[in-house]
Length: 185
Image (cartoon, rainbow, N blue to C red):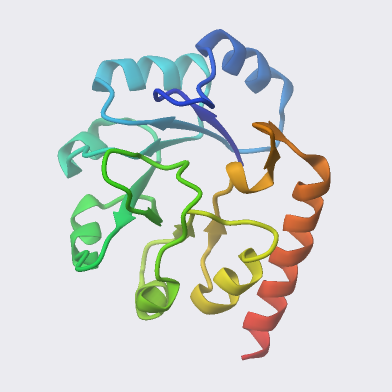
């Protein structure tokens, strides 16, 4: 999947640019990332950019998620005492687990306690994606511990705010190695 950040962020992309890129990439799922955006705005951008998924990274309600009109990846920021049962009420197509930093919605570069969620990821009936501080150095460990259905990375494969092909290659190698280790267990 390829992600387009429409929320306020240093990675924010212009809707027109996302539309152009979306026209060029074929066979790759397109995800739009939003934080507490008005529902009509999300729907309009999702339609125009032909998004396959909408990733909601704010305090959107379960009702909001049901009205989006596209498959939803609902992000939950994991803090001590976080109630994972809450994720079930959203009926999302995917659950994304990310680190919790007050006032920040993703892109923190900080990991969370992966071991505390091992049972959740293995027992979830909804596909689980993991984000938060993933790098070529730690993605293998995250995968082997959590066995997620997917991973979400951005800053962990950047150098000076730009995607770094060498880091992306290292990340993919480490992710595959983590999956191999996980399957051996």
